[in-house]
Length: 246
Image (tube, rainbow, N blue to C red; front, top):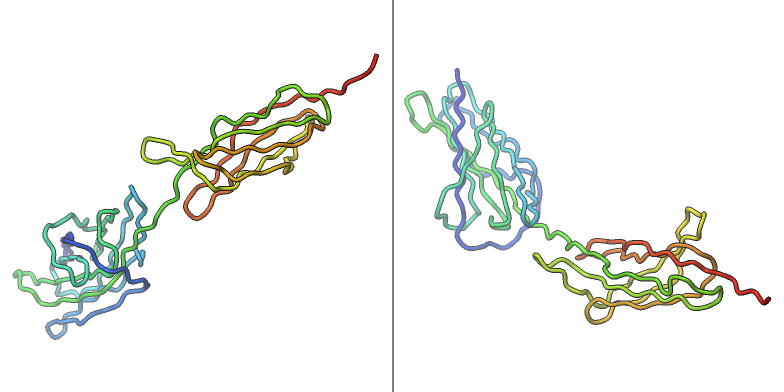
């Protein structure tokens, strides 16, 4: 018997409360005697959606031989629906649904309906799954990083300045009250060593200093946090010389 999979995804109006959870929670099943229909797997569950991207969920339905066609619909649980979106029917009784950050968070209901060769509805099954939007971290950068002066006598002060910024759409905004560390790699070495740090002020600006010891490269590093990605500045080289009396 040829299997025909038809998918219908209903889009929500309004929002729902987020409920965390995993696994397929089956609801009641209605079927004629000797007819089997069961949503046996929803993966992934929960469906994690990042801002600006899509996550595809797969629905695997088990049906008996007398089933000619299966339709699948999904909708936020307890929310009235307005419009339909595409559900892709795959081989056998399998379906794929793409979710994005415009879809409601929380508990969703998947409903499968089976039809016989005459087009009569002969079984239904439903199961619950969850959609959760994951907040991605903002990109960051360290701009205008300088170690100065570029040439300095041993024992004198080297100062470091720069600006920590986070992406806001097409713009980059300064980020305040974040720690930026300064690292140093001596000429001829492959090891970076911590030398100083500072917390950013208004506009993301930072200022730090250290004593000149040996020629080498410096860079600024922000380790990131729960809302910001980590980043590393460009390197800046300082030549250190020793003063000799003649």
